[in-house]
Image 1 (tube, rainbow over the protein chains, first blue to last red):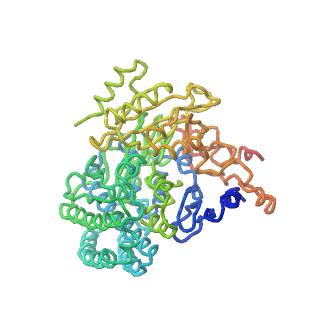
Image 2 (image 1 turned 90 degrees about the vertical axis):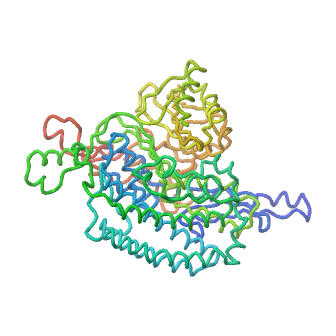
Image 3 (image 1 turned 90 degrees about the horizontal axis):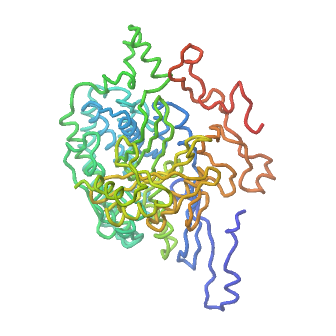
Amino acid sequence: MPAEHAFPDTAAKSAGGALEAERMSISMGPSHPSTHGVLRLQMELDGEVVRKAEPVIGYLHRGDEKIAENMTYNQFVPYTDRLDYLAPLANNMAYAIAVERLAKLEVPPRCQAIRVITAEMARISAHLLGLGAFGIDVGAWTVFLYSFTEREKLYRLFEELTGARFTTSYTRIGGVARDVPDGWTGRVDAFCEQFLPLLEETLSLLTRNRIFVDRTAGVGVISREDAIAYGLTGPNLRGSGVALDLRKDRPYSGYEQYDFDIPVGSKGDGYDRYLVRGEEMRQSVRIIRQAIAKFPSGSWYAEDARRIYKPSKEKVLTSMEELIQNFMIVTEGPQMPAGEVYFEAENPKGALGFYIVSKGGGVPWRLKIRAPSFCNLSILPKVCVGAMVADVVSILGSLDFVMGECDR
Amino acid sequence: MPAAPDAVAALKGRWAAVTDRASLDHPALNVPASGLLGVLGALKEEHGFDMLADVTAVDWAAGAKPRFTVVYHVFSTASHEYVRVAADCADEAAPEMPSAVGLWPGANWHEREVFDMFGIRFAGHPDLRRILMWDGYPHFPLRKDFPLAGIETDLPDAEVVAETKTGAIAAPMMGGPFVAKAGGINMADAEPRAKDESWSERRPKPGA
């Protein structure tokens, strides 16, 4: 048993007299309903007030970066599903674009639009879960039931597109695994149509809810300066008033064509972060509708990248050259030049970055995953100090992290 | 307003030891470890690169000179550009780098992770402990000489080890992720095989 489980201040108490409150050291997690996975918080309490909070992470460490060094670029796509497992499609896209930057490969407009639509659907799905879990954390059960009904509809659409509800593994280097099925974009549009009023109804359960506002307003305040200094990204950064969104500021995958707004908070508390996520879902619907309205025709993978994207099955079975090409890409991996790239995508949780060092060939020499949840959680020791124990639950809910990507 | 090229040019003009680094995307600099904090501080205070996006390291394989390079990505929330700063560790046996926690408190966890995975020490770090692996873990998993399968070690808790008489065992790697050797001449060489053969049908398990 680690030493910090002892009560460190019992000696101080006997020396300091009756007024000195006894400090209690408690361990919250790694198996605790409000820590959303396997985060553990080692806290030191003075009555109900947190004096020190030390996050202990790594319980879900799988060594993804080591694994990536030992397989081809396409073989790693399923591992990206399991980073932020609430938005696998967005992770797939971020990874594919990072590798394509290495190859200086631009995918066709249709492929970009498919990726944007799926990434924004993933964002809605991730924010709905974050919202539902946040609601439960502060005692509002109903929101979870509403948001999970909508998530189920999204999962059906994901399943139709990728064959999997959860671990989609949809992108390939240089494209996506398959084109969208007939009528799928129409069904996504129909989902958006019915989703907007339901979203308003769901948000109305919280936005003016006295209990919810009391539990979140002024709780877990992160200043603009702290947010930047700790490398916070995504809704947590924007909740603190920094209008930074990589979709707008460093557009990728054709985001510059779409019209959308970036919501920012004014106080940097849990309530602001909630409002930012709510508004982001509305903006995601806007992006999806625009992408569907001008959905480009043409190819859905980079056809001329013959050493990167494998040829269609019919061609493999009928043509010798394509058969060899297919064999080479599957066994040796997509061929990349030597060099270094760093690419960050605006994922639901924040900026998901991939730093790839290539020595050429089909396997990365080094692949570093910059996980937004890892950076977002690093501010916990600062933001929890002075809060009540019950507020810690609210703070964790408002930060909306995923341990799958934090621990990698 | 592109600030990154100006910043890179200014830094190269100010320190002769700062040189361009080959890069496929963002402006990148090679910096000696002794001048690292000066360069990062100048990027932050004078050129507006106020956010530390990422800190990581690269192991260029055992015996390579230099073996370890620590790589920083800084980001400007005003001009939305990145600059990559890389510094080589001089000593392979005891790699060390000055800590950037004084500039960005967010560097704390990143540097702990680099220490945890590569064994690179950060001088001046307030709390340099392992972060993903447990305290007392004896290896540095992202070093190239650490096998993909893992190495058998004791569990963190001595009481649990005594009770269960088991440790952290290496993963069943046999048949592991398959990659062919690029440019193999004959079919036997081109055939896909487990890239990490530290433990396979041909070679016994490490530590066994």
